[in-house]
Image (cartoon, rainbow, N blue to C red; front, side, top):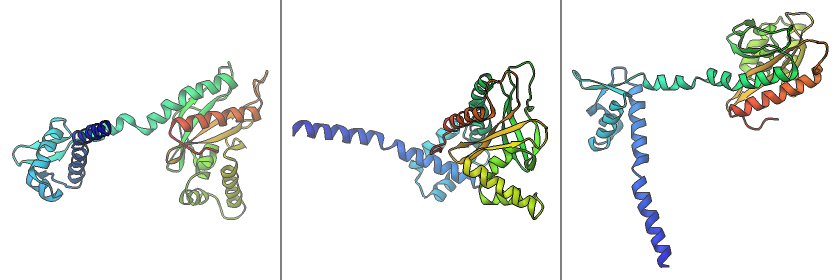
Length: 264
């Protein structure tokens, strides 16, 4: 019993010493959130009143945030305001840069293995924007330029992304097609892409190119599409069916690296 009592005492002491850290973080976030909603900043008195805290609770927090340059103090008015530091920190982990950095090594591996080109696309308004592309290692081939824009109705990448998106985006996409046969075909295309989680179609822009397109997911849902513009080459490294399998595995690996779970 003596050892158990001693262990309990040590745990209690540990809890006592670690407790203040959590409220301090909470109060710091409260200050930041409060100032984010005030156009002209706030004085220490206004912070105390607005957050229903005491001077003892907030003074050290505000001083520390100011020293770390999250806040700035106007010495003439005594008002504290947010700086741009949080904005700058958020852009060090730009989701687009993160997507590209994770995708490029996998795309390079795919192209080296299959000897086909591939590109990574995201939706940008009504367009498909190519964020990254990797050419075939062969002397001749087909590839899509990084930075290229295609209308969403002309790109398999776009239809695959839309197929795995919410209903509002689907309706926006379908709105680009005339009522009747064209819209029904587009609807069927989305339904098929959603059910099989890939699309295989003849390129709408280049004759002789078979587009193989697969969605890419992050923890929030679909975020991009990985597409191969497959062309028949001699000698053939892989046929279209096998190339699609490798593309799907590559897209799944990319999705997991971005935090996606429960992939089919």
